[in-house]
Length: 117
Image 1 (spheres, rainbow, N blue to C red):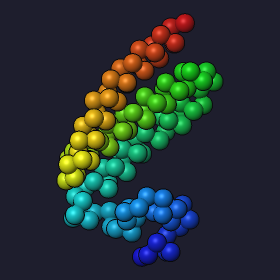
Image 2 (image 1 turned 90 degrees about the vertical axis):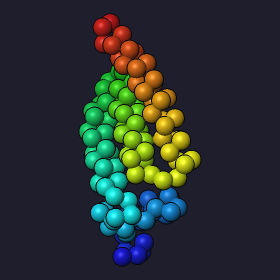
Image 3 (image 1 turned 180 degrees about the horizontal axis):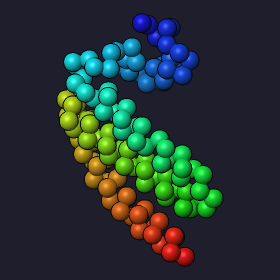
Image 4 (image 1 turned 120 degrees about the horizontal axis):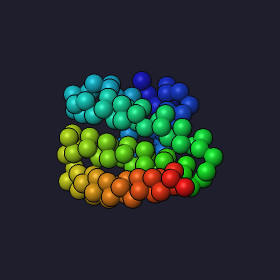
């Protein structure tokens, strides 16, 4: 399958992310289970982010949505550490885990404060 054979959105994503091979089989041994684990992480993030988008209070919606988004980033960073080989990408994954964990703690505190009012 070539990029031309991909459905519209997949072809756009392929073009927007140089080096991404959307045509590679999900179980490709070069990546181990990374594609499946990444898809699962994104699936876990989708419904809670959509629920947060429906919260009427924009401040609460922001914090709830970003908390879920940050957890998704941590999940994907852990997948990078599990499967990735590039030292710069692994270093970035470690930094993401550290920063986003701290920010989740801050957002959780904000959410608790806002929902007590």
